[in-house]
Length: 493
Image (cartoon, rainbow, N blue to C red):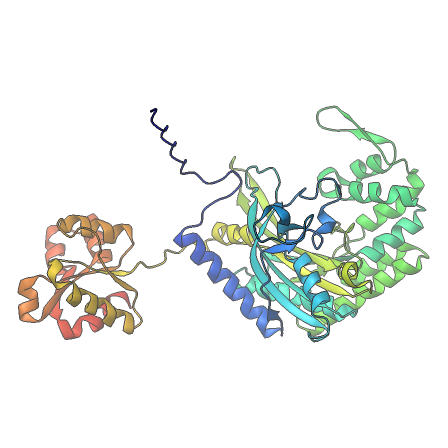
């Protein structure tokens, strides 16, 4: 009888497009999100946690091809799961935190206060091709107000975003919240007599303003241009006269908000919807000033065009203005770390009724990378005090020492590996980043004392001190067992 073939061992590797987070990464992210949560809490927002799984129907706006219901998301059919739901039903990992909010707002509309103000933080998943810096799982941090049509809600989100950036350590002058309005752009398109079938193409071209400048956008709006490779890019087909209001809109930024708003009023011409958008921006600017959010923190800026195809009113983004070195050693501005705006049509998918909403999403990984670039994150998290084991028969004594330290609020653990080689125990303590090692052999136990080894000072002495200096400031001291906690607290304090 032939032997069964041995099953190959599974590869110990992270799936493509995913990554693992270890102690330092997790601690830094948690600290940053805790600071942001405190700001949101002070502004009256409540936390919300939703399931990581939603119905594909709830995520339908990301699934344009009905024949491929799992496009863009990680999805599975319920009938394929034992004990699953109705045949034909699909479930999926959430794509973002906004679609679950829309579902919650519709499902619990009779129970939730209106307006409903919530913040949410957690991982989301996208079934897309991974690449450098582009992962299939990442964190988002959102804050939204659902049920208020007032631009006061938009102004509050912008002010709160500025507060959140400062709470995590970004200084004033190193960030700017920039604000625009889709209604203003609608007015510009109306003034330019852009046809409905041309509107989306115009939006795509003005989004390139930062990259190609005025002349580049003018060419893209009219007859087209050559890209850097020499390939021809077709233009939208507007006349230069039609392109005029669009360029005036993009170049409307003045020396202050008042000048910018006057320039935008001129750009929209006689458009009623455009005038409404400019008036909303005036109200937002006035409310931000009343809240103490000066123009060096948040400013009206028509150059904010990302998301204008999705948002229905005010739109905003937070940009970090300090410079960093890229992978080639070149200086560049860090760029955007958050974006949001008004999206009045999202909840309507569930209820059939228009429900106004506005919100912002912070790119968690990107903001954390910015903090690291500024030296505001990455401080070493102290490891635990390690109680070494000199006699495995006295494990209870060692556990009692660790318990006393923990009761005093000091992070501590007992070495649980093979205690035979004491050097390995100290190597373990070093790998854990332990500030202190506790040592008690049989002799110390009889005398009621412990040895307290300052590992940080010991490393410093070993690297820098002479023999005489080493003798004058030993890194290991003997104290009474009853004084253990006080001595450790003195060292790490």
